[in-house]
Picture 1 (cartoon, one colour):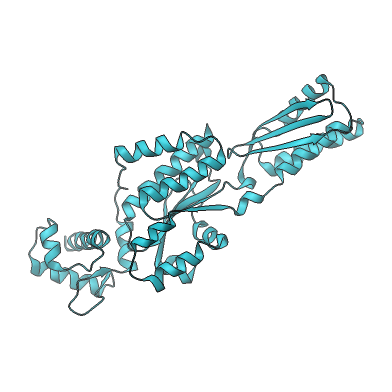
Picture 2: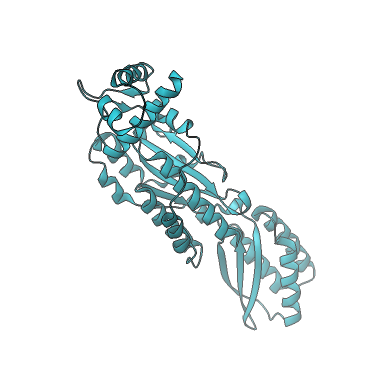
Length: 339
């Protein structure tokens, strides 16, 4: 009973501090929350929480603020993630369902996450190596020129204009299109490239130079890993809301936002699309960002995490709301990629 009551006091302190950005005193807790105990009992509970390192007193005669350890316990004890409001769900659906391609999906997701959480949003482009081939289309442009279209499970589309060494008949083109799709559809990129290599050997032995050129172009498209290190950042202006702690929290974050490698390290631990990962303060992999927290999850079709998205902000954040937004946006993006 005592532990449950102290957890309720901690929860109230976290909620009030996130809301007011001011240290929280026992009188404010009693006035704002139905704790069902006297102010003296609340003071005793606060003293116990402080002794356990869950809250701290920043200044003499000031109220208390949560520590990283306190935030961690608060997040771990969340029985459910706060549901999004109908308006928030509608905003997600409206914005994301209007996306026309992968770049548009990523850009809209970043903007949406920043708006919902009022934090800095980070979305990693789907990692090519983890994706599978959905379809290959070969479109004749002229008798000696062709457009190849490679469509991946990530929603990424790679197009190449191919100059052919000689003409490819309609029958040969239809046969090649069938052979290529039969070999690669549903295969991971690395395996698909190997399967195409087998077609190259067959066409070379048969003297089909045009087929060899087409297949080589497709293999090159599958080997293009430019997107693996790409991240998009949005909502940097939200940092202006955090006036205090500039030197310890805001400036290191601004510097990190310019280094995509650092952002990938921050997001890197969230490899599952079914779990929201929360790293608070010094739990993160970057020591210079010990004043920040990261809420992230993986996304991808059929619960396969192809990349990661999340938010970064000061440790004083709305964890239930941020976790709900990150999870919801990831699920919508996954659904769009699957479709």
